[in-house]
Structure formats: C-alpha cells, structure tokens
Amino acid sequence: MDKKRFYETIVFDFNGTIIDDAWYTKDVLNEMLTMQGHKTVTLDEYCTYFTFPVFEYYKRVGFVLPPKGKDDFEALAKYFVRRYREGFEAVKVFPDLHDFVKSFKGKKNLICLSATKQNELLLQTKMVGVDKYFDSIIGTSDEYASGKAEVAKNFFSKTHLDLSKTLFIGDTLHDAEVAKELGADIILVSRGHQSKEVLENGTDALILDSLEEAKDYIE
Image (cartoon, rainbow, N blue to C red):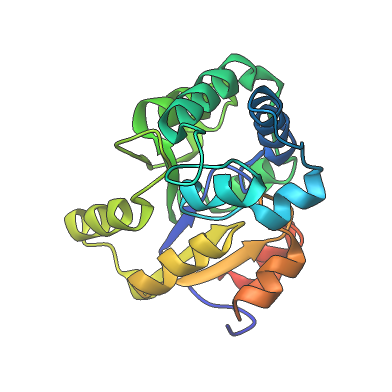
C-alpha cells in the first residue's frame, strides 16, 4: 500500500490487535493439552501453530480429533470459552491502542470485528474499557470462532460503507484474507497470535510492529 491513504472506516480485530491475550490463550490451551495427555507448547510455538479455522489449529498443537482420535472438539471449545472467560480480567489492552483510537475518533467510522461470539465480545470490550471507542462492535453467532468473513460481509452490505475506503487492522493471516475477500486494505501488527515469520511467509500485506507505526499510513 502507499505511504499514506485516506480511509473513512477502520476495522479492528480484537484478540491480538486490541488486547494482548496471546500469552493467556496459550496458558488456557496448555491446560487443555495437559488434561488430554498431550505435550504443552511455548508461546513461540503457539504463534507458529495458530490458524483459522480453530479446528485446524487444535490439530496443529497436538489434539487428536475424530476420526483418528477421541479428543472432543466441541467439548474442548466449550472448555476454552469458559476458562478464558474466568481469567479474562488478567488481559490488558495494548498500551498504544488508546492514543491510536483517540486520533481518529469522530473522524472515521471505527469498528471492532471479531471471531468471538457476539455477547462475549460485547462483555469483553466493556471489561477492558474500549467499548466506548467503537461505532459498531461485531462478533459471530457461535463460540467456535467461525464465520468472520460472512459477518463482515453482512455488516457492510447493510451499512453501505465504502469498502474501497476501508482499512482492516489485524494480527493474523485470516484478517488479511477477510480484508482481501471484501476488497479492503489491510495492515497486520506482528505482536498478536501469529508470529512475524508466519505473517511474512503467508501474505504480501503491510506488516508493522505496533499500532503507533500504522498512523503513518492513514490520512
């Protein structure tokens, strides 16, 4: 993308972009792996294995799912949601998020889009104090982190916002895929759920180290 572009709308991913939760997700994952008798992973390994859909990511980290194994995906997903919720107060917002959003509040349409279930997302954004920043907060209809692209398509078809003047900011290759599918620009910040190496090997999108750096690309 060019050095600087004008955008009417900025769409933020939540996990790993707004909140620093990769370490916490890894901890809950390791609880689950231990319970099922599997080897735990380091944070670096987690950021290498993480992907969408979640079913595929669970296989990568070591769960043996049907038909080859007996690890129950739905039971694991429900356990993760419960345990993640129980300790969510330990999760913090990335420090540069506040100044970044305040720079554009009232000047751009600011949207939070997440694969998190809608009611959970509304609760979590409120808990970390960022709900007030966004014009729209959009989650999915299930707890298995699926359907993010379809949710985004539905939202934009109803609001008639100009996707050619929309920037997505995320931390995963899936965020880049969603933006590409919708015809929007994307900036990836390499401090979330996928490592910089994974991002660089998987996309030609602009990859930065912080939200602060992203200001230089937004008019």
